[in-house]
Image (cartoon, rainbow, N blue to C red; front, side, top):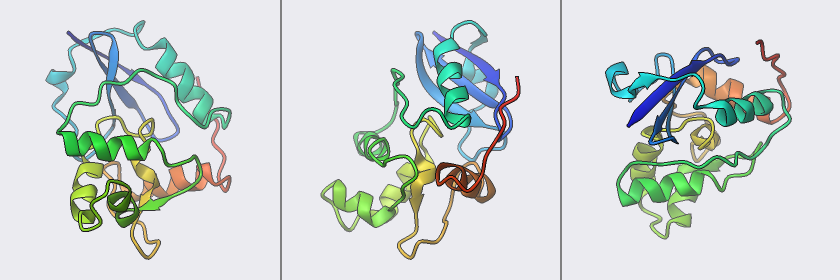
Length: 164
């Protein structure tokens, strides 16, 4: 059974989705590959206290690694890519090619990019930490401006105040 809530962030409202009480989605407003609202289930603002607490600590600069139980629904390849995303340390980046190498398939950088773009739990599964081979910012489902802001924040070049 799916449930959701909407919480504020420095990047605008975030929709958190759980399936049987386990976080399976974090979506930004206007995000590419965002599922239709009707698939998020009923609204329950009490179910997501731990996720909201960790997100608030992250945005306050007090948390660098999330410890939430997650349910990542995707193909085995996508889940492998998403697992690699969780291994990129806070404040660091990796290229699509580096992720493909880590998966043991160095020619799969485009497939890694496609899987990265379909990450259902943005920020917590840090797809924003993936960049182009030359260090350029490339696609991000939440928009390149948000990606740059997240990277600047993690590198300590930007500070946000969390309201609320």
